[in-house]
Each structure stands twice: as structure tokens, then as C-alpha cells.
Image 1 (spheres, one colour):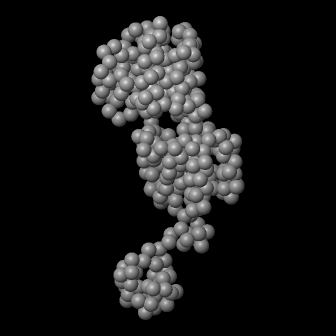
Image 2 (tube, rainbow, N blue to C red):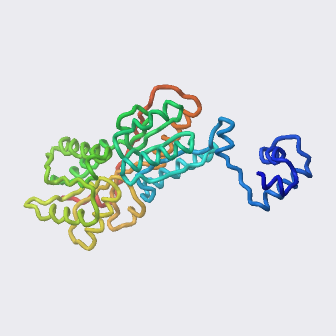
Image 3 (tube, one colour):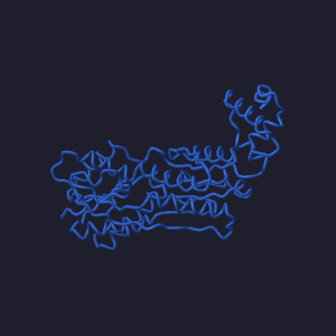
Length: 327
């Protein structure tokens, strides 16, 4: 601002009035200041300006597992759309399932004085957020609950989804249904495993430990698991995949295989309906998850002081062909 004032031949106070749209500046003087601003490439530090005024910084922090995962891309887009309508910008980062990275990102966003936080938790310890929450920063957890704090949470029906997947496969005559899930210490993976167990019991096909393979998975481990399931004395004739990435690994491993097991994947993914056969999925709306969490966050910013809420969004079976193969 000193440079702008010097170039325009005015006081710093006059520059301040112009950039803050305050009255009392002659139009010709304002034009001179704006020309100097343009020439020097001056940009206001909105965060500093808002902090001085004790108002909103105009930003929301979003901590995800992996920004590159199409599911979380859908969540991010929904958050951004609502935030934009409410005059906020979103800053985001990926935890990569690392609790220390999650903490680092969340506290970095807090140090930038974001108006609120949306977090897909990677760990089980979130007491580090208590000082921020007590200071008035609203926090909403999505896709998974917090570990050791009570806060607003938005989830999907993980148990009901895998129950429906197993029931669907059993209705097509499958008695040996396998489950490939993510690391069991991840909330969604553990919930979907619970749903798989419950689904086996409900369908009367029994739960068999040898048909379960929990991650973390990569393409190689999935290929090895499928070979093991196929070489059993009583092979698995159907598979429930615990998330979209595992489904893709399975499809790659089965490429070129003549006799494929029936398959139902948890999470829809792009082009699933165009494969041969198209992939049957348990679908839930990523944008609905992002919207519900962001709506909760803005309710808190608008003064809602009601007790923390836990919202569970429904899922639905989308039959396309891969899960309708008869045993």
C-alpha cells in the first residue's frame, strides 16, 4: 500500500479508503489510485482484512482421504457448489489415510482461520480439534465418524448396503459369496464387513472366514486372492467388493477370464455401466454426502446450537448384469 500511495501521490489512508470502497474520495483521485494498483499488481490480503474486522475469512477447510479418488471428487464438487453460493471458497487436501497427515492438514487450515472444517477422518484421535471447536470453529465429519470427540457426522448405510449385496447374490443361487474389503481398522471397511456377515446369516448361506480378504489391497494382492478363492475345493462363485478401487482391481484381474464369478461392488464408478458385463453396484450419491455435510456446517455457522447430529444416507442396489449371474 505504501508503493501504491507513493505512485498515486496520495496518503496510505486514501489508498485504504479506495480498496475498501469507503466514501470520501474524489473520483479522479480514486481513478489515480486504481491505476496505480493495476500497474503494480496489488492484491488485497482478504484474510488479514477480515481478521482485523473480526469477521469471516471466507474459507472452508476440507480434509479428504484422496482427492484423486472419483468418489471424493464428487464430494468435493458438492461442497464447492454450496460454499460458492454462500460466499466461501474451499481449500482441500488429502490425508492418504495417514492420521498424522490428517492432523497436520486440519490444524494448518485452522491456523489460516477457516470458518469451518469438513473432515473424512483417517484416524481415531481427534481431541486435537477440541480447542478449535471450543473457540467456535464448527467441524463436521463425513463418510466416517470421529474417534474421540462428539461432533456432527454424515455417513452412508454401509451395513445395509452389504446386506443387500449378499442377499441379492444369494437370490441368484450363490452359496459361496466372498468379500474383499479394505483395511479393517477403517470405519467403512469394518462396517461393510459387518454387513457382509449379517447378509450371509440372513440369506442362510453361512459365514466362512476363508471367503474374506481384508486389505489394504493393490492389484497384485487382489489377483492373488482371486486365484486362492478359485482354487478352493468349493470355490467362491460370487464376490462382494468393499469399495470402488477394489472393484476395479477385481475387473482387471478377471480380464480375459472366461468363467467369471458374479460381482457386486460397493460404490458406483465411471463407465461401470459400459463394461461387459456392466457392473452391478451398491450406489450412494457422493454429492449428497458432500451436500449434507456442508449444509450441517453452514447451519452451525448460522447459529444452530442444537446437539451434534448423526445423519445416515441411504444406498441402493443398481443391477446391471455382473451381479445377476446365476450359480
